[in-house]
View 1: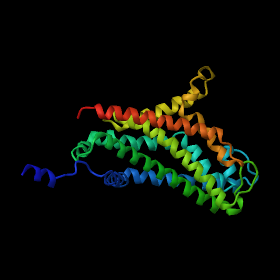
View 2: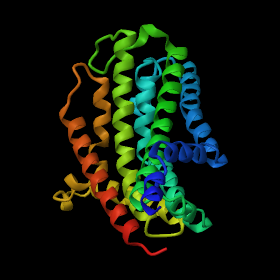
View 3: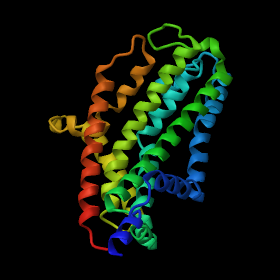
View 4: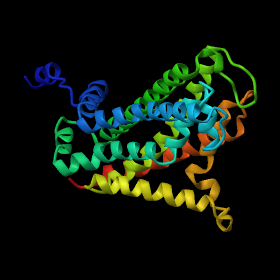
Length: 285
């Protein structure tokens, strides 16, 4: 009787990871603030394109303004990369921090995180799902801005204005390849920020604290990069390589700065997720 019962009841003790991931995506993309943030991010390239068009019509000779943005006025390749470069300094990190704050701290403050543990879901699998959700949201944000920026640039200047900063002309396919590299590189930087934000999110019940911490860290890192007295610290700061994003607009594309940024981001991801895992697996409740 006992042997038959054991043979007939190999009950599943965990929910499939795919189902958890899809449930997390439904939860993320049904939030009104998520849709609002994505809508605002999509508007940024459009607003920049309109502003550049107005400025170009008022000043046909060009000149003035930020060098990268002013170059986007007559170059369809530059606009999406310029928008990613500008927003990478503050806005995109904040959206990544917002997503990470909602992922753990937000659900913990509303008491919905316990439902995951009753599913049953191990804490390691829970962190995996939350990390994948943050990664998907940041990827969606960057791809959305890149697509809208590319379309806006093409509407402004057409496919005959795909010039690199080196003076060469790219085919439409090659230009899309450069933009895709820029989007992938920026996404990896945001994943690094998201990993650190998840570690902070696992230590608090206040999602706004996560956003404020990332904001403070980004500002402090940027300021430290301007101080030669602490140049020994610069290689350890994530924003150190963010200026290298402009290298995707060159032909041939310099790889040293971009590669350094990839390595630094991967290290941040490993450290951030390790700290988050250590905290979430030892946290009571």
